[in-house]
Image 1 (cartoon, rainbow, N blue to C red):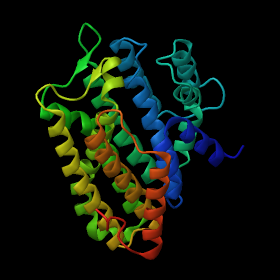
Image 2 (image 1 turned 90 degrees about the vertical axis):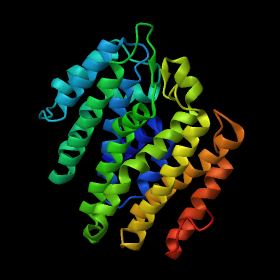
Image 3 (image 1 turned 135 degrees about the vertical axis):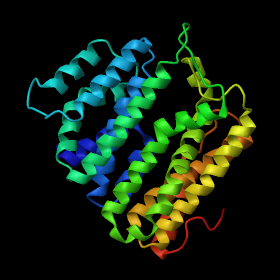
Image 4 (image 1 turned 180 degrees about the horizontal axis):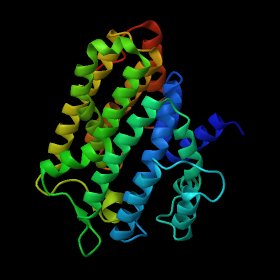
Length: 307
């Protein structure tokens, strides 16, 4: 099996949304973002490790960040040994995530083969995210529950797990499309809110299963309606960000990737507002939205004309 096929198979098993949108990107950004997503997913797996105590989760995050800069060797290298250790006592019950943990050495090898500047952006931002995750895992109480209390808690959490991803992606886009240098600062000013908006939609969508597993991300000092309003505001920045890409001449695949992620989140937020927690887009809605975005991109038009 070709490396690209293996990467896509791992995406298919770990994220329906990103398995759909990452292939829209041009090369080499497509591969860079695909590898980065899988590595962030490894970190997410440790953060969400429902079968491990907090100390084991923070230790695994530290071990993982150390591996990012170690040379990848064939056979029983550090990554292979770490992976075997994680799987000997699985952190959670999810076949796709566990398969990814088993392929950590391979994904790190792919990381080592990326362009130097792209690799450094991924490592730096992923390390920041892992450190942020450790801080929040460390707040788990004696009953095994993580509560967010304030609006600032929510901002800080979303920065750690999503806003930093937005910052990394921005640097990878500028690396791919030098024409974006003219709007790079404007993109950077919106990147964190773009990531936060997508994360807030996920928090709202998954509030019930997350709470059942001991993670309460809807702050006690905010109402659900206030979080919805915050997500709605953030997604306005996502629209602005994508339009900056489009009008500054970014590759159409980069525009499509961001437009589709933004449109999916906007549509999901509306469903959640109208129908409550746990609601999601149907396959028909997903297909129609995807077709509409792609048609707009091909026509050189805004993919947000109906909003």
